Image (cartoon, rainbow, N blue to C red; front, side, top):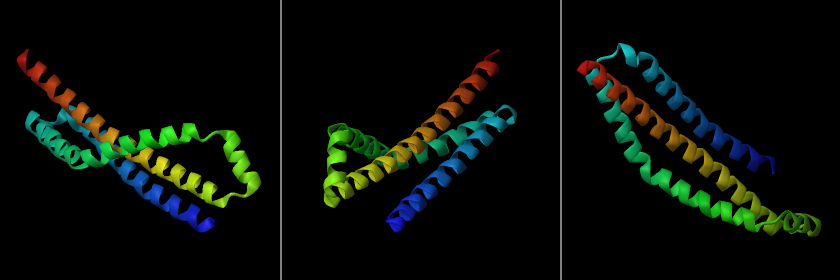
Length: 136
């Protein structure tokens, strides 16, 4: 049991660490944006667009998987789980644990994809602001 929990923890830690690095990069882009030229901002925006496109399928798949997992979770009542525990129905409890793990992974994937979308939106906003300032 502990091995399964450790494996889940390591998998989620790896994804979250990558997400933290992504957020730090996003923050750095935002911090340096006022000092950077328009072409640098647009270059960064192009890079983020490419990264977003690369992760689009994974992000959309995670969102779709998340919807299916939420439906399964709703179908699974507390009474059912209590009954499985009481009867020591390890097969159903194991399936429930696997679904919960998949749900956690999908939520992390969606969050990371959303962070990339946020970075794109931030850089697009900065580029638009630069255009507006240049027109004055």
